Image 1 (tube, rainbow, N blue to C red):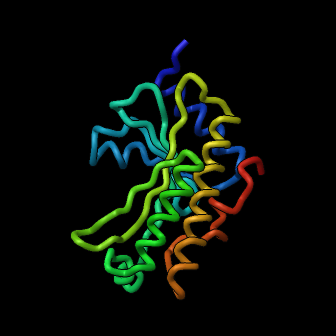
Image 2 (tube, rainbow, N blue to C red):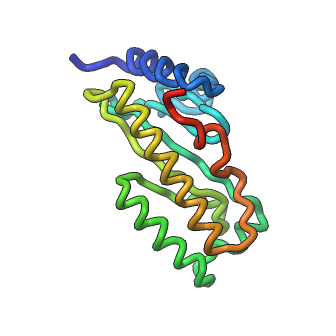
Length: 170
């Protein structure tokens, strides 16, 4: 039997609660701005779990990294270190079966989103936490890749963030 959007939301909220990580139900806030999102949770400092209105069959888990202006200046295609980092990040995302998208503001790269999804038919506590762990693990690897290619990179999230570092099971 297919799960409704509200059933998925209730399940996901219960899955998040077992982690003891602070979260906020941002559904009403998001609905004021867009009809594209059915519901959304902001978990910890940089994890978004959401259900898009146009996809009844899945939920999404995203880790969003934002880069301060001084880091954004380094993230240009002319910089060979950035080209190398792009290839390494693309490779780790492909190997781990997660997506990634560079976030731009005009011509500047201001962030990076790492994301995956869980299909409604297999949405249970284990699949949810496995997906969350996988996205978080890749996020940590991406941070290491960026730091190894750019000395002094100050990306605002880091692998000590409680959202990423904490085990999903307590």
